[in-house]
Length: 113
Image 1 (cartoon, rainbow, N blue to C red):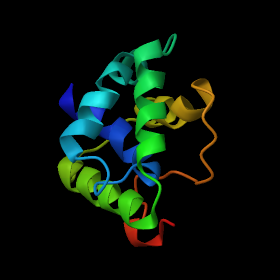
Image 2: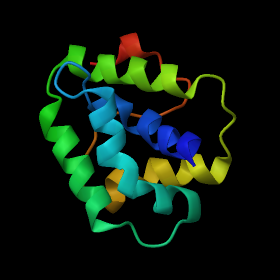
Image 3: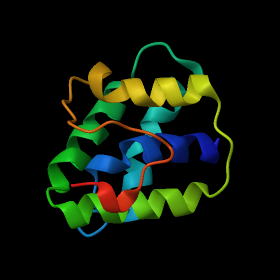
């Protein structure tokens, strides 16, 4: 279960900053997204609330890069299923959040602006 939550965090790392938000906070705020990422179906409102909160807290390049590094470190060498990645990728649009970045588990955190 934890690995799937971390997968969500990886996908969303492009928007959330470690300087503004700790890694523990990111994981706690995204925990309500776990059921959607693992099983699909409706996205819980608490998940969207967490995404919105994190998005508003990480405004700088350094913030977003910091969380990206944190999440990539946390998930290490896990193998993520395509359905898990697809569900995680769909979260921003399902929550009505416009994120101007393309997401990939292979993201170079230093390229995030």
